[in-house]
Length: 258
Image (cartoon, rainbow, N blue to C red; front, side, top):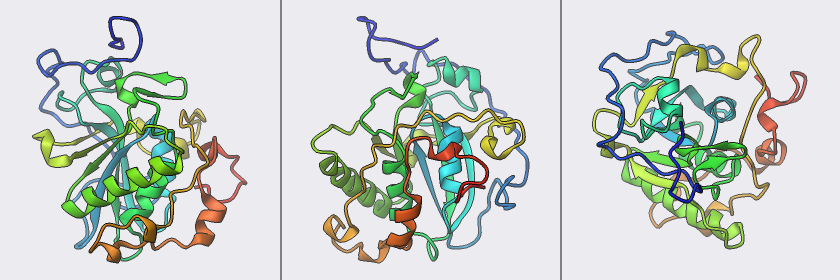
């Protein structure tokens, strides 16, 4: 069930005290990424970085990320809640506090966290509150969960820049430190959810609502001292591959589909 406010409006977060207890055993997932053929779990190669984002149904979110050059591995899961190792049903009940999320492991020599943040902002409606499209509930809220101070500064500055580009619409995305979540900010989802949209028989579905508005150029909003995080994907990439409505469920013969 979803937890709604007293007026029956916006879904409300469950309290820590009322959240489901969960379990100690982690979800079992296959060892190898179905598309990228790299490991699904660490340890990761030296120098690689991790970012966790949430922007609606995690099937399409993950597909958008695994297609970006320089991304080493992706996984879908449950983030920023209270229940250890929740099941899909528990996350969807609204009683775990988690949102559907994607863990991205990337090579910063090939792709910048700014590129990942740009995809995150442009691939959904970050002003949608507790939902995305027809999907409503706290498990569909938007979020960025950072692992170091540079990711924090870039996430916050890019949020402000994108909010301005949207013409004053209020972004509701939460930007929080991964370290705030005790045991883990990210719990792996069931194996059948991993790389779901690449697997035979997958139901083509994506709830994301891209606003078709570009993140302003990095030079206009870059925090002082973080110029070395300049985007590595060229403008020509974005001209061809920027997120558009239903972009993650294009036909198999469309470009940029794995």
